[in-house]
Length: 222
Image (tube, rainbow, N blue to C red; front, side):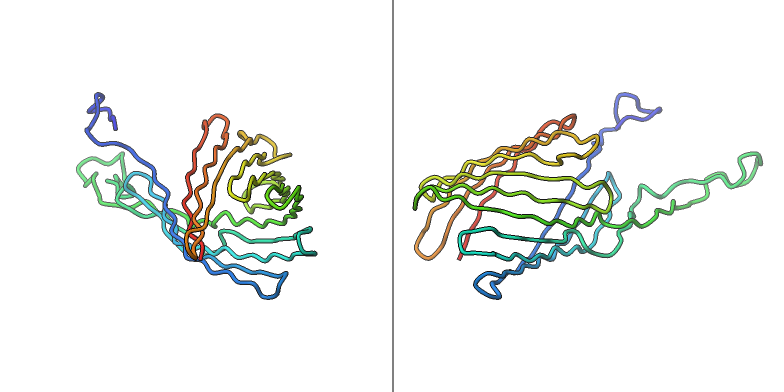
């Protein structure tokens, strides 16, 4: 941090963090219909101020035929409005700058507006193509309708090799005006250990002027 009084730095670093912790549950209602629900605690911090709240993700999936076309729909980030608070909003206020002799350092606090979470509705379809019992291809397309932007499409392909290794590729935000980036690539592997399924996944995504992101995921299924 640099100020007019300390142009070489104050010794403090400016930071922005985003944190989300979720607990989810999913189950098969029938042999073709499944539902899921995730409750998230989300928190965003900008320097010394933060906003926190609860957001729900829920969805349903319907398989038209075994090893065939699948339809799905979901709602993400559904929850109450959030609002920033913190000591960055505390200021010294001069009620009348043209008057001399009064208290020109009255303690005051800036008031922030609450804002709605960026709720997203998605509808998608996927279709598997099985070459043999050990190799298959999954093609997926989903349409996205966010509350804070225009509609767009996401497309992706996953190639499973020997039922253990996966290669993935796709493109985000097709037909979205002024979108940043879009290309996504990834890979993963999974294997069974006793009655558990362990998985490791990696994904790379292009975000244009914001450069790229790298995601690593460890999974445990039981």
